[in-house]
Image (cartoon, rainbow, N blue to C red; front, side, top):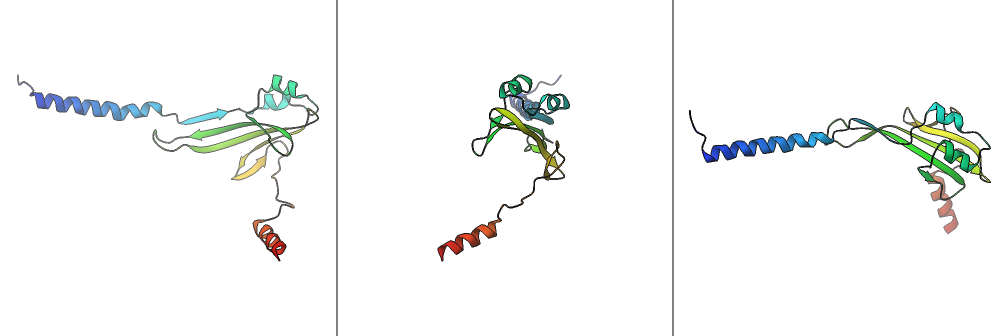
Length: 149
């Protein structure tokens, strides 16, 4: 029987170590992952116009974030993220934001915003928000230029 030299044994050990380290990176592979608050029909049926904030916390839970300006609203955010390969950047495949709007501590309305065909869409009222009276960038620039004259 032929005996392995010290150099050949070290080379095999290094090759085995390199293979183990390279395959070890695959352990973190997640595939498709849902992050955040998952909106389902049961949760949506528990939200009632006129309910208090305490009732919403009891039935839905603590919000992901709240509005800081322009009104009193709670937001529950969820995303579906997919990674094709272990070291690839994750891509958002679906996103939902459950928005609950309050006035005087009571629910006035709620909306489930998500992406549908690449456009922001409210799944509750089945409508897309429109720009309406919001000025465009060009209109703002012309207005600013007009104020300088």
